[in-house]
Amino acid sequence: RNVDVNILLFNNRIYGLTKGQCSPTSETGKITKSTPYGSIDTPVNPVSLALAAQASFVGRGLAADPKGLEDVIYAASQHRGTSIVEIFQNCNVFNDGAFDDFADRKVRKERQVVLRHGEPLVFGANDDKGIVLDGLTPKVVSLSQEVNTKDLLHYDETSPVMADILARFTFPEFPVPMG
Image (tube, rainbow, N blue to C red):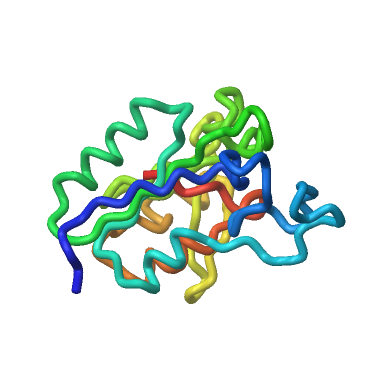
């Protein structure tokens, strides 16, 4: 159907408004009032779910990065069709620091990869790492004289295969895709 609607999904990995109950995106093992022995479920991946529902624009931003989030929301607003933006947002009452491993300002460059159409997937504090494909399997590589940016995977916002591959990136094995 691809209805022209923009959906902003605020993900704090908890149901904060219901006093800290486990949510579909809560981490496995998360102890809450509704899961006193820890969540046994694998968390739902909102980006994979949006792609499976055939949203024609899927993005991700970080509430603690207003400029990056503004860019993603603006792009979603300009898109004609269904857009879904997952927004990582801290819940300082019931799940404080849920995204600190990759969202803290000091580690963002090392642990996130910003997606820009046509550009190589480069990340790292010194832009010294990248993503290559071995067949359809992504791998993190260090940039060197043998591997440079032309060898890296270049982001193609029109490729459903690439979107699916990136949606499956999980930290710490891979940087968290943003954009």
